[in-house]
Length: 202
Image (cartoon, rainbow, N blue to C red; front, side, top):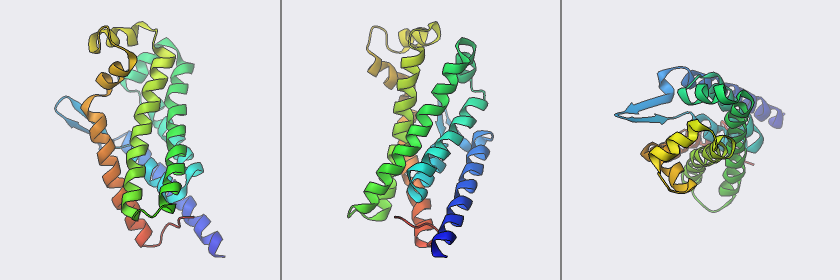
């Protein structure tokens, strides 16, 4: 009976986090514009799900993130859709699924260490945002690196430089802000859920 109760709670939490992802993706709640910077908070529900529910549920939430990214119609996605819709779908989904899955794996490993829970949760949140940027940008270069759309930006941002410098220039300072904001907010919410015994860590 206890396991059934927690399974129900997991499904409810999964549905809630998925709904929050959609809300954040299609409203201004998911983004914060500070001058020229655009900071996304859409990795936060994925991080919370990875912490609270584990790798499989983290991957599911990553897939939901992929849906919102693919359907959101950002200028980048629209431009890449005109180049190759199939590869754009891969770009939107695979990095986000891997992000959620690996965040869940590391989240479980960190929670089994002797780290205090808020620290373990914060590191998992940081890794979620880091994986999102790393996998998405790597896939962008791999799938679209030879297209004129990426090549023009490569030359503009990192002329004559290697792919690592291009990625750093492309993601900019906002990526670092996303890493730490995801770490802090995901840790605070996950710890509150943990203290309220709304989640059970295996």
